[in-house]
Length: 430
Image: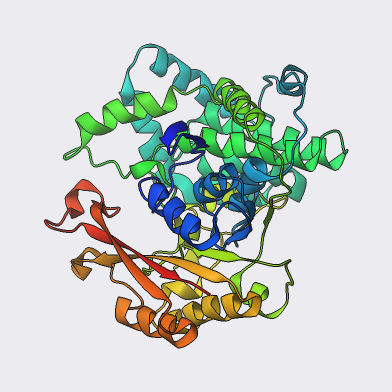
């Protein structure tokens, strides 16, 4: 999805992302102009879907887009780093259809295709329910029977088919991913092309995933007595996306958006905040923009599927009482210190220590929670953040409150009246 109405800039939104700063981009631009003007280097500390990094890059600033999650790093690298445009048709000619190597899946694909063609959701719903019921018994046994290479090459089919994605969709996700990794291992594509192709894959799965909000925390839970009409429409819609063709469209979109951007030595890094404070030495930083998580909701839970697909190994799965979680979470998913009341203050202080390390200005995004009963209680209060700001920046701290509000991420059954969160921007000038 390309956005062309942000201060006249063309910004690409590759995935549905929690807390994406689409509506606050004009305010971020205004604060950046106030602190830097049109020159300088900005560190986007938690780049996420890269929309802020893209915006600052498009404004002419040199940007270092950082994120602890690898899939976000790849997205940011694809959209801000120096590039040489590829022959896109030659690149896409490497991605062709093929049969799955896993026994039995083609039969499921045939039934799935027939149901989609007839727009009959009953078969798809039945596949989804049966998959969830039999997952531990059938999938764990199948996974145990395969070697590491076989498991890795069939990650999406083994873990996510029948639930998050259709069987045919999962087959093509594996096909695309395997081909991308094969190309980069053989050095047949550049790092830029690798990140561009992976970003197209992430964007494709974000569009086609069968889950609430188009995130990856859990697949839709089907309750036939409650949400059958909604689910029937949604499962046909989501399963109908042709992954291979959608992927090719996304690649062309990304190449086009990059053709409109200029190289200015912006780049991406894949570090956690503690490493940046204590170990990693970057160049001179004039401004840090930080939009960290504020609630107990770990981003790695909402985006564990693109994170798993970005790795060259098959994940070890988290087990609870001997069974896999409904979300199919890996055991080693990243846990942010910002998402715990015990460690949040230390984590936020690290942001200020980093800004002190580089003698940089700081823009810190924050959102107020009107109703903590929604599950979005903040791990640190605005007052404590302002205390930290004044400790490091003295009187050079400005608070900007936005007139608009954001919806919290809840399913329909969890909606709470007057739950909107007000967006705040803390601007600290060096």
